[in-house]
Image 1: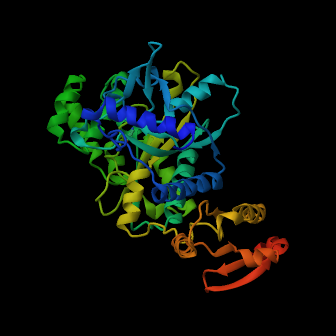
Image 2: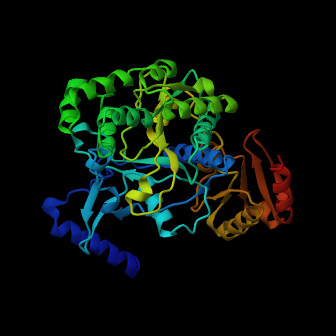
Image 3: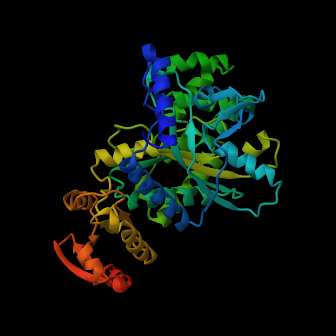
Length: 456
Ligand SMILES: Nc1ccc(Br)nc1
């Protein structure tokens, strides 16, 4: 029974059943550990978030770029003990290459700049929304992938770049309905640590690892880190001095403990003054304990946090003036931030300001009353689509009751019915689902009807 193709398919399924009758194990329908599926409702929210990110980036004159999710592992072999390189999603490919799923976007950006060998007109204001990966032992059951809005300015050495980035971040927060009562941005400069270490004669090559360890102080007590700092070769006195400086929460107080004329303090003061000019000063707060966990930051660093303190950092960034040199490139100043898709959604959900998607269906549902009119329904749908209307054409012979339920569930505005009697008169029935009225429209006038019905 049935045509050859369906008979072949049935045989294949039966064959599978017969050979593996004892062990027919259903496919595991879950996505791989630590990853997410985005069903249409999830995707509507994700697309909305990405659209907000894209429109703010465009408002600030940033251009979108992208790079492969797969990169050479060598982009991430930094030896500063960072979490991000310690959890690399790396493997050896079939060509024997050491590759990794990117854990962050900045190294790919640096590689792309390197590839152009100074041929790119600076400054660059580029953004991207890459999916980034980490391979974390599932002991902590955390996600292994997220989407991270990256905004970067290359070729500007002044804090004007950081101020513009902070302003863009705040513009996004305001756009999605958050205020400076909900979210703050802690600002500091690693220049403070650099000056303290220099004053105490600590070699520069200890700087990145010291910062990565100091960043861990946010999560683990000092005595757990103290050993690591001593293992780095820092004297106890240096550690004490460092920790005493980092507990300052005002620029005034920290100025008193730093060498006079500190460049880091000068820059932070200038940055906070520019924040005033942007009208975002109340979002921003100096906090000497913020150093962020990436090894390559060299100057200003910042992180957005929810003021109720319930969530992990919303976003983070800073200046990284030496990254290109570590890749063998020319010294090029750079600053940027990364903004993950998960924490912000948690925050909006908790604040109950997630967008709702009424009317996210289609304009019109078209269906044929009886399969002998299906061809006519195709023509009607095509006329309406040519007018730019989104049309859900019912592909099977369904009862009107089912179609109307389907249309209202998808918040369609109209149902266009191809029915025998009207069709013989060259007409279709148009049902306005918002008011429940229906009328007939000449098929030749459907285009004008659509223009008029959707003129708003
Ligand atoms: N770097 C990174 C990658 C993936 C996730 Br989830 N979190 C951080």
